[in-house]
Length: 279
Ligand SMILES: O=c1ccn([C@@H]2O[C@H](COP(=O)(O)O)[C@@H](O)[C@H]2O)c(=O)[nH]1
Image: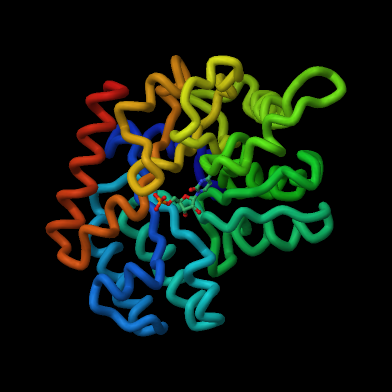
């Protein structure tokens, strides 16, 4: 049986656990700060500690695939196990792999992360539209079929993103605004919201010149280590703040390896998000 669409499952999870997304980014510097070796054993202990501490309370996790791929197939095995354990505990997993390629290759990426019987099947995947939004079609189609979702890079949190995303097209729209418009089309008519979200950095200040009302989720990295705070969210997202999934990775992970300290940090961010956006 195909599960409910990602957008509906995400809304339910946000209502039940709050919208916070905790990133699992096992940087070498974090492994070292936790007293772990920069090897697969350290990666495994780090990941298991985060999963065991937070999987029962946080709504969404965003493992950063790069930090697992760094260790080759054994690192990917740690990632597979984390995805399975997080989902088993009732959390949603957004795989941050930022895939994007010509359509025929995109289809293979989609099978890797969005086909239900794949070992890396995730509730949603981050993808790049910068080979043209249409190149993402195989991922959109498979996500619809498997009840998964996508988060498409629209306005990223890093300052370098602007040279591409704020470039103005011949029709006068920016590239980022065009990505947002595509997402609004994908999500048209979906309730409670569609499954095709945008990545929009929490670091970007006032975005009122963009139409963020895509009737889908907005994954907002940049809180914590990159300088944004939960209090910034209403100013950045305006009315669309109700669909924001704020991500914090290092801001939480730096509090480890103590499980209680990780839980406290995630709870503090969750409380600050609630105070800022309501709910
Ligand atoms: O625009 C983007 C898109 C993705 N990211 C990713 O989010 C986390 C942020 O980590 P922090 O430690 O909270 O800074 C990381 O995995 C990035 O690759 C982003 O930062 N900005």
